[in-house]
Amino acid sequence: METGTAAQDDAAREPVWTGLPPGLLKMRRLLLVVWLGLLTVVLGVLLNLFAGPAWAAFALLPLALIAWGWVLLGRNWRSWRYAERADDLLITRGVLWHHETIVPYGRMQLVEVTSGPVERHFGLASVQLHTAAAATDATIPGLVPAEAERLRDRLTELGEARSAGL
Amino acid sequence: MTTPGADKDVSEATEVAEATEVVREQVPLVERRLHPVTPLRRAWAPVAVIIGWAVHDPNQAQEQLTRLTTVTLLIGLAVFVPAAALYGFLTWWFTHFAVTDTELRIRTGLLFRRTAHIRLERIQAVDVTQPLLARVAGVAKLKLDVVGTDKKDELAFLGEGEARALRAELLARAAGFAPETAHEVGEAPSRQLLHVPAGVLAVSLVLTAATWLSLAAALVVPPLLWFATHSVWTVLATALPLLGAAGASSVGRFVGEYDWTVGESPDGLRIDHGLLDRTHETVPPGRVQTVRIVEPLLWRRRGWVRVELDVAGSSNSVLVPVAPRAIAESVVARVLPGVTVPSREELSRPPRRAGRCVPLWWRGYGLAVTDTVFAARHGLFRRSLALVPHAKVQSVRLTQGPWERLWRLAEVHVDTGADKTVTARLRDAEEAAELLRGQAERSRTGRRDARPDRWMA
Image (cartoon, rainbow over all chains, first blue to last red; front, top):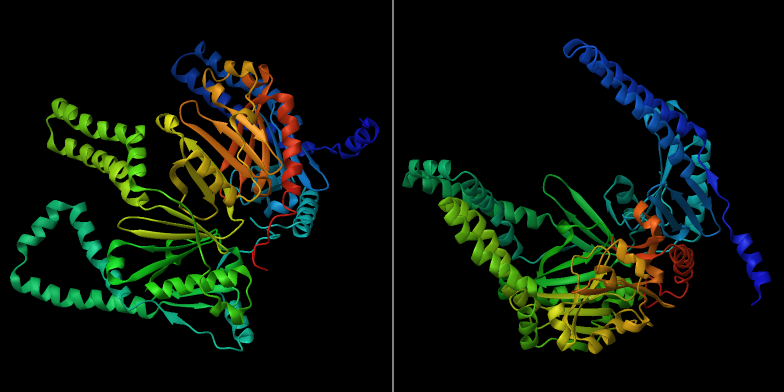
């Protein structure tokens, strides 16, 4: 076997992975703390009023959820990666439920850049790829707008160059 | 938002489109109308509204009816019938269609104008259907299947001969014949590949569990309900849908799949079937996204299979309702050129530990990847083998849940353009990762020797 050349080829082909910027993690953790923090306060006050101070200790449950979610969001954020290869885009995500998607550029029908009000406040945008198959779920969330636009333009360009019908 | 590659298939008319049309148009467009029988069909719409109201609210409808005297009834008829006729006539009068070099244009609508421009090179299939009454009247419906078209985009009705001529012309233009000659090319000759005898079809339906299950449900459930509730309405409300389902799965299927003929022509695959309603479908070459070979348990002794196919934007999904395996496989080989259906031995099973994730049924799973297709089988009693040509793969996905991770297993999904996903289940994790990379590569290169959209060009 000519392992030499094959191994080199493989090394050259090995995708260059890009992670997500920390902004997304920050936004998600903030949302988690805000919502569950509110829940803690409301639950604590209500229980204290209607059931007594001993019961109010149950309001600590959401606090535990915050700690758990904090770790979970971090792990999930680290699991998101994407790589632009010569002919296709790779996206992997998920810790417990691991997903890996490959979309050849030629099959892209539409590239979408979206950004909701909260995302905009944090300076984030997501890029979504659509192919003729609705099951294709290729979304990269939480990119810096400049990177999202660069990715969109590059994907569009590559898609046009390699375009193929159904 | 940007759109690489794909164009919108059906574009609503815009000012711009109108303007370019005027510039491009040296030869005036020949706009045609539908067959003059069409208003009769349209006239049913107001009647249907009234019947719908009566069914929806029977008490009030009866009350209103008793209050009616002969005079008001006559006046009502005198107003209603001409109004319905006028409505039918006007919708017919305002519906036009025209065939240009690249598009079929349908202009319709009385108040709300709607113009559909259907790109001919995007045609996935052409259906000519004749419901029973239309056969009596000698007319037919013509529908182009393009991703995104809906019921409104069918041409109903055209004269029988006109529909055939139009289909031939549309296919010739879509195939890439020069516009001047497209008119004279005429219908491509067809060679019969397969015909399903009525006897075989009847036996195959008798041997289908679904037929018996729905019949049994229709016979058993209503009496049980009667004993339980003694309410006529409840029994009727459940018995009618059950009987309908039983009829549809036995008699309905027989009538629909009667005289099933598959033919081959330079325009692609021709599928003709139906006892009362006749359907003639044409699928141009290279449009088939997935083929499934289904083998119900009771058919196995006779060696019969059913073949289903997926075409983007088309509702029909049956290629062969029943046929011996060898003949079915030869038809599949014509539909997907260069493809041989992998035999049972070629399909590799998941590793033994897959039984920890899906007990027993894991034995039904199988996978084979050849130079041309990705083939995945599932089902223990009712085996189903799905074939996807590499060129039709839109995206490849690998998924792995926590339990599968524990047993080092993963699943590989292959998405096709007909919105169907074929899954190779419970493969060894390393094999799956290899498969994912390999499949991406194959689907990219598989496109190279695919035939062009305009198959005669």
